[in-house]
Image (cartoon, rainbow, N blue to C red; front, side, top):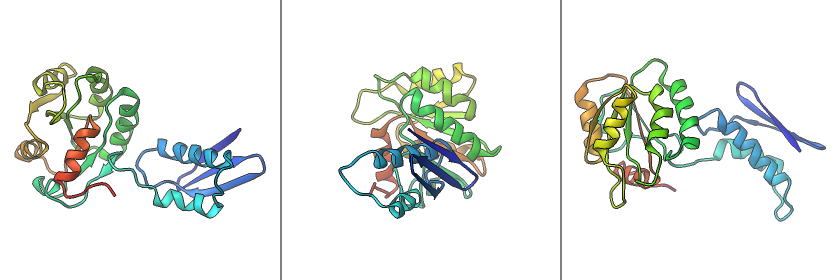
Length: 211
């Protein structure tokens, strides 16, 4: 039995005889505050390892999760986009993962155009993911997932158009970003999503492998 409350900049966790206030996690998305509280609850309700209150507070500032609404830093991929663009990465490949991504996109975009670069394995529900993400994006570039059975980019593009988006296809993440740059959108926000395998390719291509 535990509760949590998220304020503007803090998270308060409480259970019987204990409470702690942390900063909101640096991970992007409102849902991450609840995830932090759940992690504290798990630590509080296990007896194998003693975890101090100071460590719980520090977790909010230290937690890092590659390919979960990760803003990519300067690197070869980001350099292909116009100045002022933001390049984000998420491994979302199912509806449950796509929902918090869609909410985060609406907060991050603040009226700016959003382009989705999407590659998905063949055994994933591309229609459900597209249905959730499409209200938050304006344009879609569909790409393959190298080395794995995947939805054909042409099929993903048709699916995006069914949801009212403009769409085109590319052969690689680099190719997709070049297509986006050629459109000439300024202050663009680009999200690459749909597969953790694809996320690994993207991190490597941007010289930003996971820790």
